[in-house]
Length: 172
Image (tube, rainbow, N blue to C red; front, side):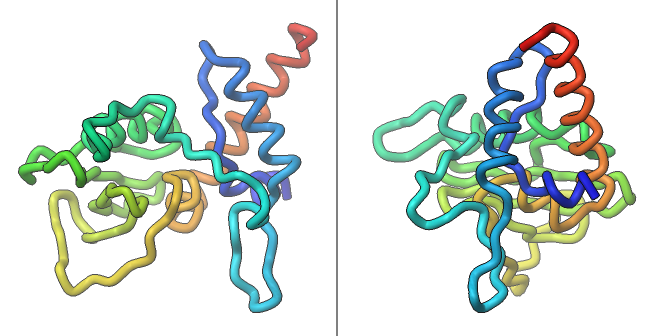
């Protein structure tokens, strides 16, 4: 099914940015998830450069990215495909960490931590951090939500199809 074929694609789908959507389509066709010999999914081949969606909109302060600004970009990128998503105001965010509350289309709530290492689930309710929870880091919000939410995958696939149809109609 198309939703599975394009799951985990690192793309931006906005009306104002056809170039971003097209580059996401190119990423979908050239960097489909592959499986290594041990059955571990990876987002791209090791010899391919890794493209981070966070770098475009971030502000660097010395050698440390301001994760609050990164988190705002994350929220704006995927808000269309989740029920609710916002930066947590309950934590004193340092420049090197931010927390994001997300409710999936299925109604599951999570508290996500964003650091230089990536994104990971740190709680199963808004504004909750379980120090004993040891979850996997994801390089992109797309791969994290792809794992957590079938509704996200469906919304992402539908948005991709709509954007492709728009590009087709305008002859791009």
